Length: 127
Image (cartoon, rainbow, N blue to C red; front, top):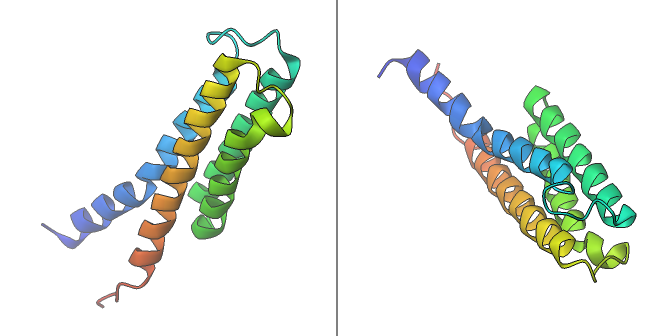
């Protein structure tokens, strides 16, 4: 395998978690309609705002400062998972399910990406 192939393969592998986070953020933004909690304004607002925050952080991580924004993505995922209790819509089971599942998934993928980028940063580069 040539050096260029290895570099391109490494770039795709290190950014794969960010594309997963982008998809999860999109799912969080789109969820109120299909999951039928669009009538609950607190749940819908929390879903859209947290999904957009995840999108902004993931895009910023793709552009630069990957470790910082992966950490912020993980924090956004934790806050999305806690949103039903923070904003008081814990009695809407569909909204709780979406926020818990997607929020935890975002946090886990972001922390995994953070671990991969930290491990990758310590690998010596050959000239």
